[in-house]
Length: 423
Image (cartoon, rainbow, N blue to C red):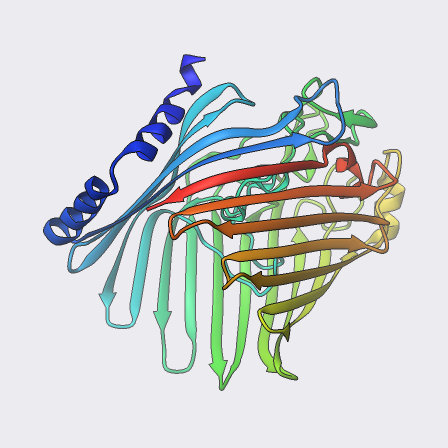
């Protein structure tokens, strides 16, 4: 119990610390050290709707303290953001470093950020094509704040601003990949064993951690023409989730991947429209006939967001995955059920603000007419005061087939609540 109780103690200390003490601390940091200070403490609990004897009833049970500091050194800015977590599901306490970076401008038209940082780009709403930076899908599915879907990267990011275009270059010397579903907290369909994987059947992946050799590179060339945003993308690295199998060890691997894409965002019919596409070149399976590596794909996304009423907005997207060399894929496939050549996905986000915008009700839904499965994310967030916020939500998975993307998670439907104090 002791090993994961420290964050809970810290949480309680923050709750009983007089606000005047924290105000003095924040003022001192700002006045004497030119440092901005932000923090929150949070308790979050979630429960599975269905019993699963091989998974814990609690989907999430943790207390979290986050501290964020930003210091202006005149010619550079140093940022720190870290979390201290007490996790009753994993029965551990841990520290998570989300940001430790320095940013500076060596030239008038050049910005550099070096260190651990959250990087994101692209136009999709919770659908990613050209954003190949690491994600934490486990956090997303168990009910952590959406902030934690974006995992940090150790990277050097350089932005160069020309009169005609802007260029962003990102170099990550060591590949980390996304936090994928491995059965420790969310059960999933294991194609190798042709049965559901859970805590009794977790999978192993082979790290790619050779400095300089297992590196990633991403670039974006962007330009604004009036109110229209145009961007070209290129990525060279690896599939962010293990989309291959080592045929000798049967461990999961991260095959090499290159992605070439473009996006457009512009006003349309009183709303905002977006389009994005990308070609996923699975370089270790150029002919699509390697049954141990995911095939190349073409991906499309089109979306539209519009205000539907007072403090009521709606956003809708259509997404398509088109598997390349499909005949070769089917000939080489040895599992129970092969993927379809086309995977269609529709998303809708509805958000309504009430009670002087202190209450936010939202529903984000995914539905795949090709997989016949769905994923719903209802959420209510109420600001009790400027500092206290109460939240409740759910992760609802629907699907008949264990092999489809959302259908495999049907037994992991969960609900959660949280209480956050921010300062």
